[in-house]
Length: 407
Ligand code: PMP
Image (cartoon, rainbow, N blue to C red):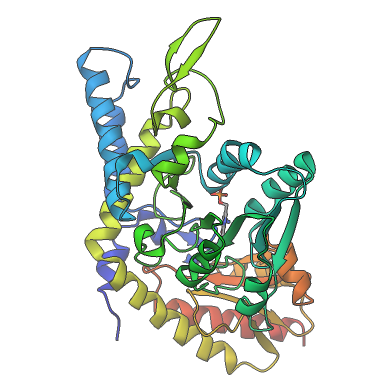
């Protein structure tokens, strides 16, 4: 039985009513980007039609309204992830931008030659490449926590990586390629035993479960609006205030300063120190509307519904001869990677699309995890709370049809 009234929910999402290639759209690429419900679209229209102006710059009415709405959006995000203070919530253009901000603002200041940065095999390229760039610039070293064949980080091996040169940890909350949910609270505690700060990539976690950054005790937490039923071009960097205050700004410009002369610039207080220039005001307000929408359903309820979909889909795919599920962690989010014997993932994606079924194929911007599992690529169905058991059946039927073509 469903945990929510899926048909009522689906009615909120105009795009889910589309036909693709003559079939009803079956949208199973939610890990890449999820869809936007009408209340969020309406909020964006209301902002653009009645509230838009630049923020923080003028005394006129619209500017004051836009500023208030933007700051209210920040508080909505603060409460959503249970941050202690709105000063700890910085609007970025997305997860990638937020990680780069931490690399430049924290990494370049506090990580030096011979220092070590620990990542996990499960990381998305967004949480690998910035640290490699830093390592190259500073002569620092990236070390990698290994995983088992199920796609779970080996905690003892992770613990063994720490030494007196360890300066930073970056780890994903949920793997976008396999769905593995890392035991983040425990991994943060291990890092803190050595006094090492931790950045958690929450891009695939925040849309699917209740996240409490104070409970996790992570030092940084990052995620994107577009995976959360919100707009593209917006994301969040959460950071503990004490760390943010010690960091260098990443970008210089207007709004991030208190005063500027050609002799000296005094930076603004957090969070504004990290928000140079005109921010994506509409996108921030849209992201907050998306959070309100998800919160009204309830993150626990969303989690439960997606687990129902994952269990059913796992069960269905396991029964198909020649289909292998990649990523069998005990604790998984609703991401189902799979391969079909004798069929290239690209062909699977193309053929499923002919039936209106949207899945992702490829390396999922996580080449190291694919290498570790000895695969060039997988197909990936990733679910959201608005997906249905009937859509899982459509996927199963689609896979059978693909297998027939390649018999
Ligand atoms: N980390 C993870 C785990 C992701 O899944 C993604 C998006 N695929 C990113 C980071 C990057 O997010 P964005 O493209 O929104 O910056």
